[in-house]
Length: 291
Length: 311
Image 1 (cartoon, rainbow over the protein chains, first blue to last red):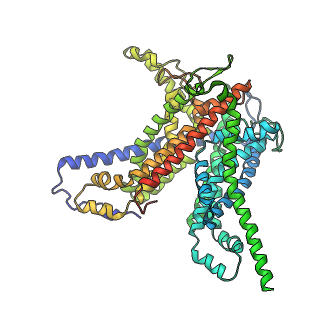
Image 2: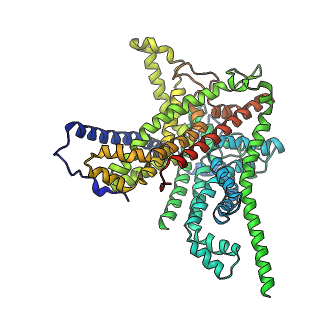
């Protein structure tokens, strides 16, 4: 990629003043130092997660309900299932609206609304997750006094949409113009060309975008704080007025607990959450690399 | 026959186009609806306090007196220093990855830095509570007890380890990957001629970087920094968990305080009165507007300052 071939200096040794040479080495040293400082917390966090997480994970983690604070043992099967339900419903929303928006920006370029959709989608991606939680609260919970899990999905769906729009637009751009022209030349209507030729051609890229969006929102706790609320019990109904458990909330509540016996559950939940996030990211990466 | 097929296909085209446009417009509707809900929700507070909502530092729940200035200040005092630290570390790290490191090292290092971005905020918070808070607590104790440092011991406040300082450290760790990956991408896009020409003039590696690469990449890096600022302003969980959640402007770096996001996170669920709820929604509205402006500016800067041919 980059021109690493030109790194040796033709005037090596010769005309280079010692001041310039010193500055050159000093700066190289500083770059290495900065990189090491950047990597240190990452390695610390990994070490912390793996060592504490593995010690705290056992069969109960995946099968039991949480024990009351202060008691040891128990698990968070309900939070794993709750996270899957909440993120799953958000994904449906993110996929439908996100791919639709991406198709609009890329395939109906001439439409006067396209610049507005693109700009708004970009700006939407920068709105803090907690604000989206507030919006979902006022839209759903303040209005209907119920649907807690669904409100959480709505917030996460809003966060996913711009990510999916962006990646869909980018991969659709990669589909050669000639493919569209060939389809139209065969007499296919435009919607057929988009639905049966362009979208399948861009499928792996779009899946990557969706996976990245899923991995991004499955770790969000802030928008769940006052929507899903969290729960110590089984709650499979996202339209209930009772709180629903989710992994990030479990970590937050356990981390803030005054009882040290709560920490192992927080460690275990963190390791599982990080693994889920990394595996999704990794799958997305590998899918793109093949392309 | 030919005719009816044409009519059919143009009708299905219309339906499909209509559906796609509907989904596109739904994105605008989500934005508009969010803004509307926050304005309506925060209306009570804005009506009651007017501009005083932005300039008052009193946040007194029992007496129903709410001003947001403390949290605006808290947000700036956490995000701006965190961003400065992040830039000072992330840009050199990006230069290392693109200009110094051999390929076998560059790839895993930049991948590791990207992994930092994928770790959920709440896990940074947990790590900070278990690892960073006790360290900061020790630092505070040391400043308080060391006779040499008696003069600055007023800075320390209560040695709980949860403070502005702790929040800044965590936040800077979280912002580094965004800044670093933008900087890396921008530096990679600097044309090879630019580099080669500088080398041909006899420049050292550092001179090539400082005179040929950085000036070229400056706009893109700056845009990335502004985007990172947007992230830092709205970051919630990790900050909430270590900042101490005190509704007062901090007296020093080791004082507990709150940001706009952290006060919403800790109080919204437990808000007892409609006016408190409305004030928190008003802070949410403020955060919404600031994020929109910051993001829009970042994109404008990148679009305007980046030389042609670079995205």
